[in-house]
Image (cartoon, rainbow, N blue to C red; front, side, top):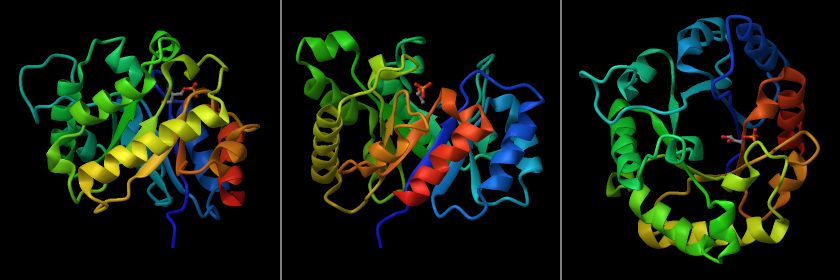
Amino acid sequence: MPNPPFIVGNWKMHGLSEAVSVAEEIARESRKSTARLAICPPATLLSRLSEALKDAPHIELGGQDCHYEAQGAFTGDISATMLKDAGAGLVLLGHSERRHGHKEPCSQVALKVKAALKAGLEPMICIGETLSERESGRTHEVLRRQLRDSLPAELEGQRFHVSYEPVWAIGTGLIATDDQIRDAFALIGKVLDKRFQGHVVPHLLYGGSVKPDNAQHLLSLEGVGGLLVGGASLKAPDFLSIIRSADQA
Ligand code: 13P
């Protein structure tokens, strides 16, 4: 049986108390979905959502980043253990807004992946090229390097996911072409297969301007096993429409 599509909402730095009711609506209206579903709210809402969704186990919760240490003098940081304690089952790592906005190198992403595994969280590692890297013909080189250096050997035999998010497609309304997506997924699949010798079949997700009107098509592309949704996951009707696309994919 192939894995059902994995639809993940990344709320980024959005969401105050009122957002709990958005998650409740998503949970209520997606009970019959056959897709795997998760929401990654800001860390301040994790415990609240965990409590609010305790009767909705079909919605998993995730963190958006973590520190690579379990605890310590790291003001403002959150550890994987803390995310787990607050109700998360997975964590996004190496998102481009961390890699570029916070200058996180691959080596740090790899340490965070190890910390996530140790805490019992499923890591979802994000990779993707910038526009200038694509335009200078370096997409493959960048993806290969990010996969090599952000994925530690400890992932062997573990459950994890990789999300391909072209940086230029995030929050811009631009979407990679079918050929660009097929090409990137083929490369990622090949690199992972070689590296982990077919032992694990992680979900490979696409992210970057996923909307209700393109979700079904994206999920129909070879290798695309799920979607990482930013802006469109903040509104229950839009996210629910994407979830319905997954049910029809
Ligand atoms: P948008 O869907 O808003 O483009 O964001 C994508 C993303 O970064 C998800 O992690």
